[in-house]
Image (cartoon, rainbow, N blue to C red):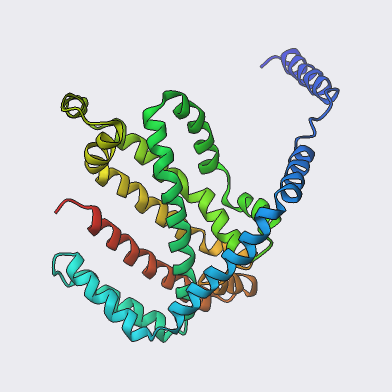
Length: 297
């Protein structure tokens, strides 16, 4: 390349840099801080009861599950796995060996806290996600508004959700549920929207011809025909909630994520690996249970 061209490009780059340096920086970070502070102070009458009452409920649920003899829970899971898979032994044997392994490693109580966190955050995600997905399927305007929001919720790093969660609810399981709720809700919303839109128009028109109302078409035609796809979204939501376990431990949420975080801080590979295997065991059991619930028999 000629020498004068290299010099010209360098001068042009310097010119562009100088021009952009003269543009004042937009105080976007300051605006976010102001907004979070305003929301925290203005709606503290909502956040404080949620933090106290809902937090107590989550801890009470986890403690109740922890006080149940592990052998009873293991037997219930194994028997449930046997029947839910059509009387096949694969999942039942895996559940038996996996849960006994978790119990043997002294992580049973932590697993119960993790299961409680995943259960509650997943239920809330489904209760919010399915209605929102239905509304999106019925309104193109709502869909056009929600799609960018869902994209933001899914692409934002999960660690970022911990900041407003701690600001609103302090530390503990409640902010963990809040962060999991934001991170895990989009799949249920998207799959519900997609499932409702994919219902055959001929079937919907036939239901209209027989004089069915909008609610009757929704609950007797569209939702039953969309069950498989919606449950696939629910499955993804549960898995994403479980993936937040380790991240939620950074803000004080108990469970299997805490020994992983402790092992990371102390560079102890063994305990961290054992806790990670326990999370995988729980994830596989939950995933297989959900898959066998919604799959076509």
